[in-house]
Length: 262
Ligand code: PGA
Image (cartoon, rainbow, N blue to C red; front, side, top):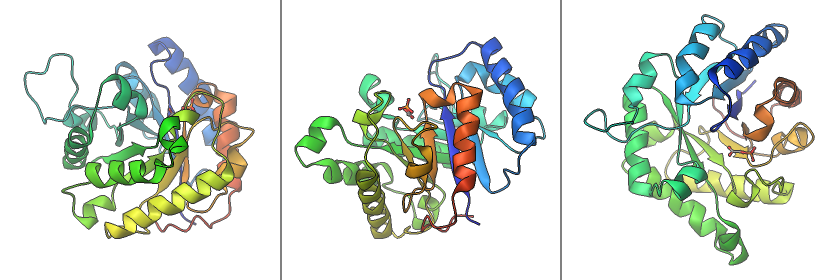
């Protein structure tokens, strides 16, 4: 069976004590199920990564992703965190270009392309986020925007390198709003992203995740859409019961995402 992804993006929520409490409750629940076909990740704040890495230990059922990293390998960049620093404490991947960072930190495509290179050099998996704003969708520009985000952020990578990247389609208007994209939109956009990746010679191998107001109630339908290889979950990943309900929805999925990552 093909691998299905679930990433809990905690954003700027939880103290270290709360993060440890969450993992203390989650790990026994994961031990109790057969999650072998799933790639489960938590993306907490930088400051929790080491503590959570210690808790996870050899327990391979869930891994760590960072929410960001710097675009240079190292240097005099006060307050920043490099990809190598993350890899050294056992982090397996990094979210790149989340719409909140594109918007608040003004991250642009050339910067994101540099970050992806740093993540790959450090031996981790980049999770490149893309997605259009409501205004872009209203003006019929959603495909053009997403295509540009992918082409420019993946620029300079070989097809082999692109195959190691994962994409998360997250329409900006659906993030944290409760306004989830319809199954028609999700299906259409994931097929379109697959086409764009094919043009970059990396068609079938790249997992494409959906993110934006995904929750235990809608997860089964969303995760069952063609080309949806999993979910990037914000708000609903902050509670152990909701996280586990989405894990259950993922486990119910039959093989049929149309991608061939393993
Ligand atoms: P949400 O966030 O699930 O709270 O909409 C998703 C994300 O920002 O990754």
